[in-house]
Image (tube, rainbow, N blue to C red; front, side, top):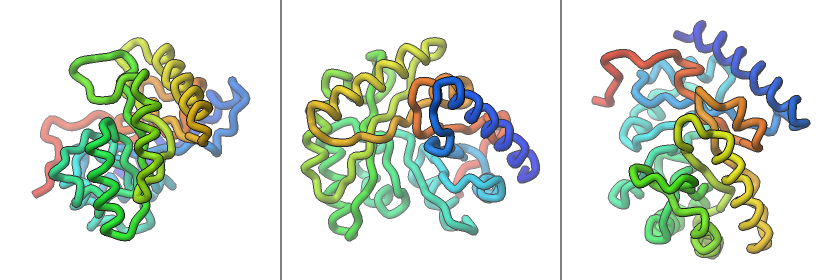
Length: 231
């Protein structure tokens, strides 16, 4: 697996560099997050061997098992939805939470981060298309939620995240960027990060301002018929 990931990572970096050049961006400002969901713990080590230190997981329990087995410096990102009863484990496991979508969840994270003596980096998840099957705050609700998060001493609001509908990525990436710019201006803060772009659309995301790309298949290939599960 490791050799394959090294080759795929090199191809991804080339694509990121080319996309950044097309719009006059610095590719060094774009972080590649290796999404190891359903891949075995060896995938984490393969990403590290390829020079990728940011690891993304959808599930708290799966990340806990993989983090314990990781050999090397890693930064862990929760990119899946978080239930309130998993907040304590999430704060103990992750360095970034990309999926804050409501004030009660933010408050629970804030309380646990403070109890743990941490200041946790978070992103607000935005449901840019209003899809009923997806989580996230509506674009018009971002400023209110961001204002609340900014008052929480245990959290450090870093920006916004979205999962757009298939086939319409560019429009929704543009919307997220505009929502970020408007919120930052009105609240008088910097919101430097946009977490958007996955294996099928990451080059478009780079062109539209992404600073964090969440890549699984582009790095690890197709998921097998029997995905890995912790335990």
